[in-house]
Image (tube, rainbow, N blue to C red; front, side):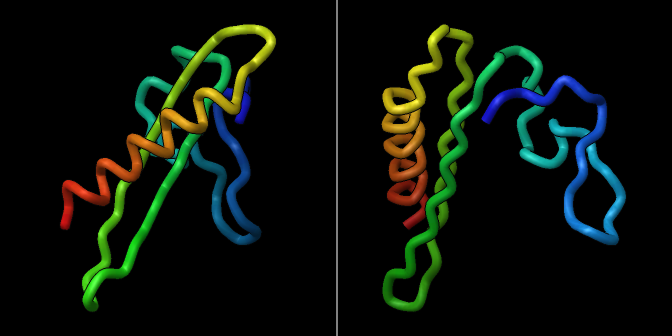
Length: 83
């Protein structure tokens, strides 16, 4: 995702606009031009384990593939840590 340049962004019809930082739960959102956000949820023996990986970067051209892999691994580590 590219960091929004506006102060508020639309969410869903009927809900008020939100700040991008609040919507994506990234306080330092404006620090980087691009973001990869990876949320993973796994069900194991009736329990739900969740993990989240977030990677911000400024490089041009944007190498989403490399940052996606890192965010995915971070999310998996979060899942494992919550089991």
